[in-house]
Image (cartoon, rainbow, N blue to C red; front, side, top):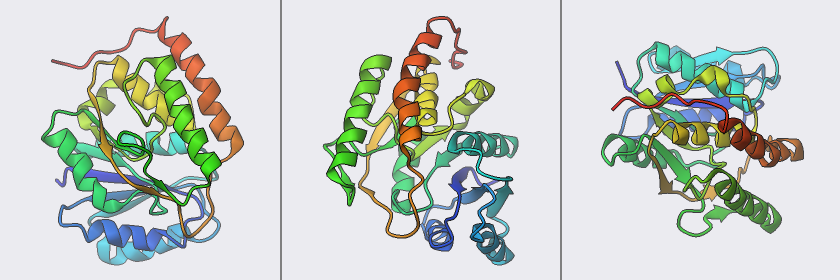
Length: 246
């Protein structure tokens, strides 16, 4: 069994999906890919199915009806991967804002450097974001600082969506308790892993804004993260988290 699974959620990513799949498969390190598509009307799923004709042994797709949110897409993907005994499960965007060439570095942090959760970080070594408007960079950067202060996590990029989880993290976290769907999901997953006693390690990356397709970022999604972190922290005072096995 191949032990590396990359989960890529999609909604209307027809311009990017074929290239991102081929790029991941071109890496020297082998990866399997699971596309979680939320009923993209542009034919994203059809492109994936066409590629499955030649790559079906390592390319898989979960099709869902309608937009159900980033968080629920990843939860569905995590459960799929755990059922198939993958050891390392990755989150990655479809639009090349996350460079597939960084996947081996995230793997290495977990497999060889003691991390339980490896985070592809835009802010751990300065601000490494390309082609974002300055206002968006500042909003993202200071939002992560705000989350760090509220939660106590020693993580510079708390909303990062380029992540590698060791299998035991996803087995320990009570996935049914994860409530947020947008950027709040990324914070909630990291905070829950942190509270369970797992080691989070940041790996510096360069984040490049998408060139093709339309961003799914919205004010509502961002507000969920900012307001949600307070709720996450408050709930943590009354919740008993499962602890990682020694």
